Structures are given as structure tokens and as C-alpha cells.
Length: 230
Image 1 (cartoon, rainbow, N blue to C red):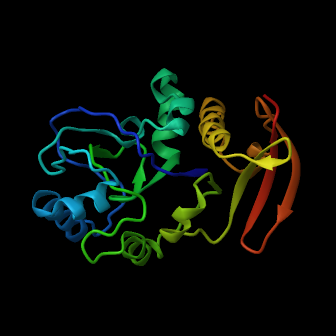
Image 2 (image 1 turned 120 degrees about the horizontal axis):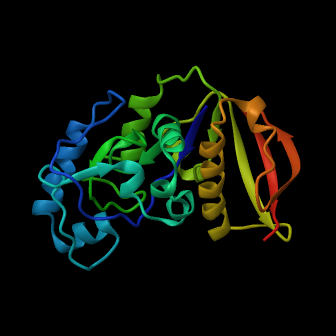
């Protein structure tokens, strides 16, 4: 089973002095070069729009250490996934199953090697609309496995599977934001620890802290609605 996942604004620094590595053969170079040029030559207002902050940011994607994408991102979902504490089998599951949608690099496998970067969600790189750029390059990618889509809705602009299951999280009957991110990480962690392979196995899991209250059938996806019990 493939698990579609969003990136995070928070990222860790450091890594190893190796080259970037990607499992999906996507044309990234024009966008990455445009980003690099803008970072090095952009005006303060352009950099503010690019990074989403007026604070100076040191970014050099072509000459920086790299690390696994799943370890580069440090947002709420990744903290609750807690990849580093998983055992070897669970890590291998995440490496092979978790697909991360980066605002800069597009579709990534969890074990792809990427440098530190900063890019505000929705920001253009010069004249390039990033979501449109990657949508055109990802639309023909197909998976033979079942797909669980745990992304925020924004990343459907990059890639939309023909059919998937989505999760929605409620607290006291209301849609939650922070808890949604936390439970996306918790769900991914539980799937990794159990090695879930398909929808059939997914349906047998009693997720910790969650109660499945409704399943809605949509045209191109199935929506599982959970109530947060913590």
C-alpha cells in the first residue's frame, strides 16, 4: 500500500555530503535551477514571498548535505510518525510505502535524499507555478497498490489518484487541524508497525485513540471519518 503524505514547513538541518537522490524520474532540474537562481539573486521582497519570512535564510540546494526526506521534515505529523524510533522492518515499510509531496521537489519516496530548503506553500518560483509544474509531470504516474491519501487537500493540485481512501478527523464532532496532523503521523506509524499491505488489512485496524464513526462513498475515493477520543 502507498501512503500519500504532505511535507512540513519545519525541517532539520545537516546530513551527509552526498548527492540528491530521487526514486521517481521527474524533470526537476529547470525548477530547481530557477529556485537556486532566485535564492541567490532575488530582491528582499522576492525572497520574502519565496520563503514566507523576512528573516535571512541560508539555502544552497546544490551544495548542501542531504538526508532522507522522512528525516528532513520535522513538522507535527513527522514527530508523531517518529521514524527514528521504529524498528528496522517498520522503517523499511515507511521507506517503501510513504510518498511525500514536496513544494520544491515534487513526489518523493521517504528515503529519497534531499537538502535543507525553504519554500512557502503556494509560492511561485519566478513565473513557475509549482503545483501546475508538477501536476503536468506526475499525471501519468500510476501505482499498482492501494492508496491511502493522508495529505492536506492542497496537494491534490500536484497529484490526484484515480481512487484512494482518505481519513477525516473530528473532535467533538468538529474538524480539527493540529490533531489532524498528529493523527496522520500516528496512523502512518501504526501502519508501519503492522506492515499493512492493502485496504483489506487497513479495515481490520482499530487505531489507537480513534473511533471510526462513518464511511462515505465518493466518486473517486472513500472517506473514513474518525472521532478523536483523546
